[in-house]
Length: 329
Image: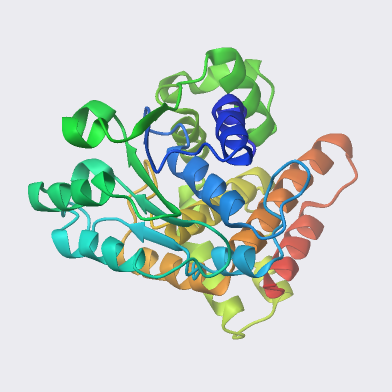
């Protein structure tokens, strides 16, 4: 998880976990687009890992990590509204009670992520309060919200608040420059999009660069590729002349949107049609979190190669990327 503005709070929790001083419940709050969900997902994966490294980071290969990446870890429960605009209802919170009635499958903890916690209605919030008053052994509940102040005072009093900061411009611009493979001065060309959290700004700049014009076509082609209806080179030919930067931006947008689908989060600043949403959900079931991050790294490497080497053929890069999509694990 390369989000430098989260380093301090990540280290704080890591130290608490190492000495056995974790609270049973946290409210993780902060501005939109600062990575609250990614932070909670990463910490949950780390805590549940059965074979942590010396840096206390998830190994990525144990049974817990493998099931986590496939969104099937029995020690993790994600609670979110069933549909956009709906509340988290009392039956979903009752499921939390049932979840904690069983012992951890892999280690010593069972973790519940509730997001956005502010979408709980009165009945579900009161039901959660009862769990917080008498937390089961090994339970960890993380409530994700834009502001802790929007939650019931009785809930706030039983949780520790972890405030995710809005990073200063120096940190944010350096990170954006690295993610987009552009100079710091070039960010000024996107003055209309430089508002909000860094993750929102990243997506806004990609939208400004015209990535959405290729988005739907890429989704359709990746679906065909994953279903074995065509081969990688045939699909790659469709993007000959599309513009390598626009292609990489669009593909990165597909990958980030698919990752958000795995984490059951809506994509910021991007309104998907019903057909596109269905394709994204389908892709999220075909590619694991690890594979998608690997593909994201390949895109970054491709950008760096284009900057360093004038003789690189854009079509060769596109071919390689689509071939990589054929290998799902």
